Length: 234
Length: 234
Image 1 (cartoon, helix red, strand yellow):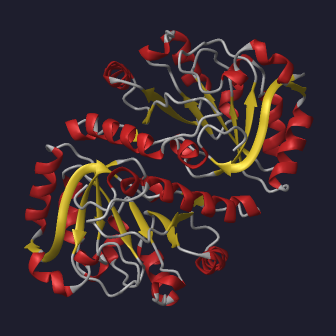
Image 2: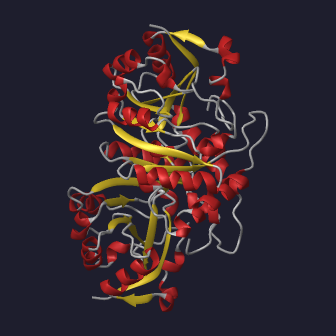
Image 3: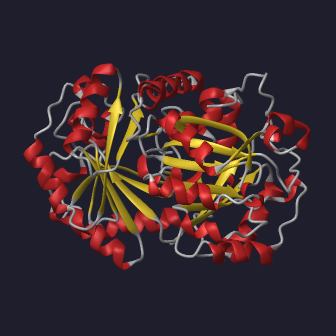
């Protein structure tokens, strides 16, 4: 069973969501069924970059994770692209046997039975600014597939329209912990990121939610962008 | 039963630790048994500011929390100063009955039976740069008092010496989830904070921990400082 892998890197800290700050090795899958207008990981999405992706099996992936982590079991985050278009079941089974815990981030467009073997399933449906549409029946199937694994929903917010959509989505899933994250319009890895602009986007999002009495979501920035800008492999 | 309260503010997001990003109202107690060299909340510590503190009872405190939150139950963070030098038991009992959940942040120098009624007890022992010394027998009593409440340890790190101390402390409490936070040397509320300097301190701390194979602690910045600088009441 071979998998297309765009990059494996770390250990670094998780920059987003429920495990923010947690030491993590990232396994970034190559390939995606979405084409978000503001995608910050196009090198792992567009098949134009396919020649840069490695073809690896579960043993090869876990050997690289173990090399990077010095053999210390830690959280492995499977991201992409959309990792759910491939079968990560064997990687998770092998890694769990070695003491690793797995998180997976996906938009919720493909349900997989291996979601149930995760420590955390992060479902990140894409708001209107992405240009994508969510199939909620499939999204519900993803939630169900996760079984007793911890599940959260993370929504990137670029503007008020996205925020209205996030709020409507939150009403649909009242029991799913919700994280909001300001969108990053500066995704060129060659250009420096302005930390003040990032702080300003956080301020806008906090004022537009908590400041207006919506006290449900947790609001978090992308820490890795604050620390490293759009550099890859950190 | 009256309590000295330096400020009640919010809702805003929790800027630090395990509940980072969570909508929260803060109840900041006045008075402290410590005098950390780099204290960022001296207005709630030094009895020089005592005339600025309100004297309130549990009903008055929860009325103000409810006014700020529009009556929506949310997380109330009891901070200070050191809130454990006062009896917040009646506040927590009253608030829990109204649907609020409570977190409390304290250095662990005074154990209280009301710790067991918290949703989260954040123990933040102070590293050498603070100039304070931890009485570990009392710290252990705080842990025990929390009973089944969730407990975490958060340590502020200014330099390598603090980091070595945090690591030794972590060895002493292997089962206590550990959060590290870079220290903020710029605490003047009148002066703007440089977000790039904050990013640089995060980079240093991540490289000095995860980058050197210490994969235990979660590393988080002070989000409120990124967003608002050292302004009070946010």
